[in-house]
Length: 114
Image (cartoon, rainbow, N blue to C red; front, side):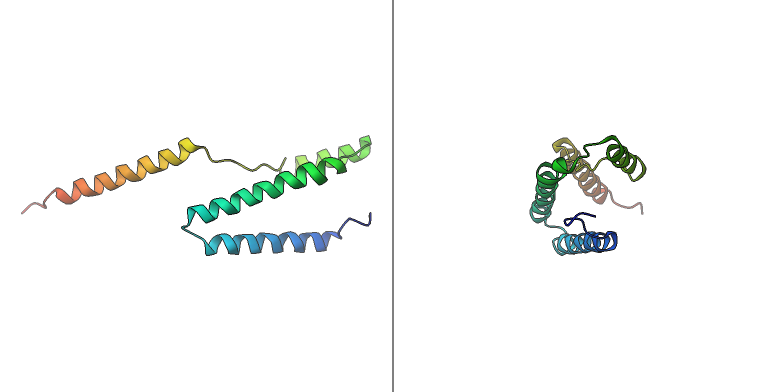
């Protein structure tokens, strides 16, 4: 283990702590799309910085280490990816909500049978 490596249990505890804190902050801002967007942007920025500044420098320089890394990627869920919601998805959601609102308004105009 190099001087920069964290023992696995400490790493797992640290990752769980990051997850818990991030989720708590996001939950505190539930319903506030601008705040949630800021959180997502920060997570994407951190992801990019770790990938570009640390991960790429740590890539294996021999076949055995490369195999170990590829095997881990294959068995534990693939390559980390941050999905970007497309504007079209947001527009479709708004359209569906508009349609539902319109249907509710239309149904309230119908008087019940006597």
